[in-house]
Amino acid sequence: MYFPISGAYISPIYLVVVGFLIGILGGFFGVGGSFIAGPALRIVGLDWNFAVGTDLAHIVGKSVVAAKRHRALGNVDLKLGCVMAFGTIGGAEVGAQLIQMFKRAGNVNFVVSSVSVVIYVFISAFMLWEARSTLRQRPGSGTRTGTRSKKDESAFRHIAQSIHRLHLPPMISLPVSGVKKISLWVILLVAFVGGCFSGFLGGGAGYIRMPSMVYVLGIPTHLAVGTDLFEIVISASYGTFTHAIKGNVDILIALVMHTGAAIGAQIGAIATQYFAGPKIRLAFVPLPLIGAAIVIYTLLSGHKI
Amino acid sequence: MKKEARKTLWAFGLEMVIYSVLVVAYFLLVLRFVAHSLYGLEQRHIVLYGVVAIALIVGQAVLLEIITTGLLRFLRGRSE
Image (cartoon, rainbow over all chains, first blue to last red):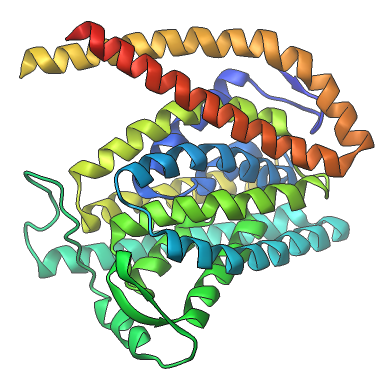
């Protein structure tokens, strides 16, 4: 199928299948799946600037569905999500401007590919190490039995506790997430960094924001998943708009991908009810590595499949 | 328990078939018609294109959510 906006020929079946898989990932892990979507679009010949902008558009639609599901399950901290949206929007604009800078310089594909490989590998390694440490500390804590529970553990709890003690006014409370007091600036900084990654590498940057919410802000994993999705709806909408006016969005590709994602997101959201925090994080580990492998392939071969 | 699992799988399989038919119809009817209009909009009114892009993806998300939820309810209702 020909997509006139980006000038690309891509099979719609391929886009639906990629969307479906990303939908499951989004619903289950609370991440936009850009570490798969970006490389998946890149490997069929789309330039990185189009892959980033189009992925953001597709993520808006997917996150609307997934966030609605998580809200119904009580997994969204609205106050935290609204505060984070401000920081993310600022970061997303910085990321989008960086893309423009490298696009003008003519090396956007090389720079974004290189950065994404480093980030994806680092995230996988860190999540593997942390989830295994947590499971070792509490043997048998990884599965959930009986009724739904918010029980969650992290080997980095002490870091979050130190950050909660940091007195940098204004301080706010997040009763839904069980945080009595935390500096507003810490939340905004975490959101801003996530926004930079979102604007630069595409997607909602849940791969960096979701772990940051758990380890730095001390938010329980299930709430981090739902709140991240809610916040992505706002920030990815802004990211889509700013990339669209820079000529980086093929909305037709995003619409086709989203048809698969709509059903995948429902399956993923339901699946979170059967696993506890560390097991979810452990299952997340290989996913960014798959994206990194695809990016390395396109970087080394210089050809699409 | 096994019988229940079979029913759920059957409902899911049927949902996928119905959903696939809807998606193919969507490709043929909608995307073919809107592709050139959107391309023209992107070339001439880029800001408006940005707004329409967000409206389209959110609109599609809401519509598909209603369809999938309705399908799930209908199929589960029939399998019980």
